[in-house]
Image (cartoon, rainbow over all chains, first blue to last red; front, side, top):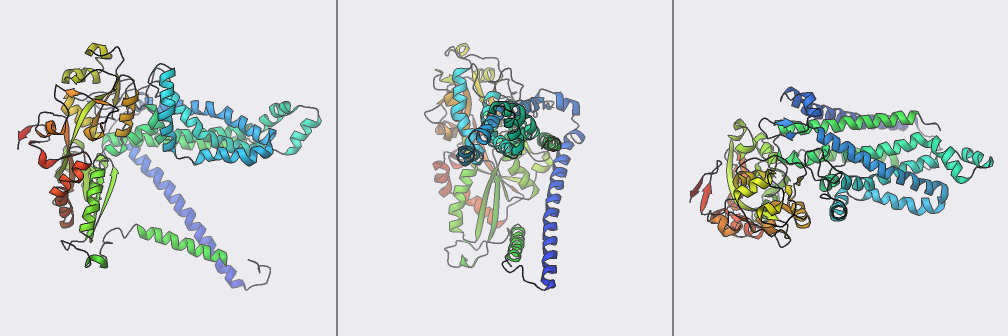
Length: 300
Length: 304
């Protein structure tokens, strides 16, 4: 590219243009075909629970009893839906304040040290495989909860703590970028008017970056919602709505990973698992729409 | 120039990836066949998929099998008994590994084409946390525990400790075996019970949770958990083999119809003395040849 300023023949450029255009178009085409066939596949499998196996839709979403080989088989997915929402939202409640405060420290209070050393360390957390999180959770968090609180240790509490650590890097990275992107004029104006640092953060920085901060939190929830392996190891997997945070329960993902390999393709139970997958997929869409909506509300 | 190179490279890579998917069959006809000490002229590739409980044995046997038959490649995949049976019935796999009889998992129309090859036996035992001072449980006591009628060990003569059930998912082959031969009935998932699919996790939880009870294959049992007798019979290999201890299951390798020659050679190798007395024993399974009884799908036991 060093000689790009030299005048060249027009023809090679034309070829370049077209090769690039066709290749990128093929890539996007492949991507779109993949996405649509995924959605179609999951939806066709998932909906056959209702159309082929004649499970009542209302019973599926409100039933609390999941007993696929019972007589008659019962498919009540409410415990899984409840488990997924409660663990991921609780995880966000734990991780969001920590993540936002950590990024405030890294951007506003100790920018040099923070961005040079702390951010890479937090991003390291994102690279740890989820099975490691699950195993650590099972070996450390579960026994701790079992000894300190009444109950078995496994359950929503253990699941949320493991997920909170997992989504911390997501939330921190996104909020750090959002805080760093804030025009410095805003902060300088605030300081010029005599505000202290905390007043600036509290009155200026946080309100203006709020949509971006929430984007980070929602993406964190989305990640927690879809995480399967680590949660499955620490949540206990009983298909029931628990009475306490320390009682075994299930999430949508853990129910799928636990049973998918053991059920025969096309059976009612297998289709019901696809319906759970469809719910997960639709929830991911909802999260993406929320993020889009938040981005449009961005005030910067 | 650089960019064009990158584009070409990317295109080539994509094509190579796409091509990979196609040539999985028949890639084994290498030129090294003549040099090997083959005892047959068979070539081809075998895909065995299914039960994760049986996977280590099939993998172990496939390694020595491939050393002996250079022309044959054997691929072993996990995925669960349901996956294995579906794939062999659908023709995607040559062998479907399963912990249960095909007719228990598939509907009759799908199951009738499948040919059963029993390659090993797995014994199972109810295991409890080592602090639970109970050595023997009757069938009725186990039923009471797993249906939630009895919730404290003191009702069975043990310590005053809440019973914590560590179960398997309802679809699991291990659970099906335990329910069928130890409890004699299907049970429901109780509120507060723990469910794990992997034997390692089950063992860890039983070892650590006070008052825990679950069940494990004999090969997984060690000092961290306590195996209890069933109706007074200790869960040992000999008691399984002579038919006095009833909680065991066959490990099946299903083929669709009669197997192809290379698949048949592999299945014959699985049941040969070399594997039965070698890998089968080493990995904690019980050789089929050692069994003095046979059992059919309905649980009827006959002396051999």
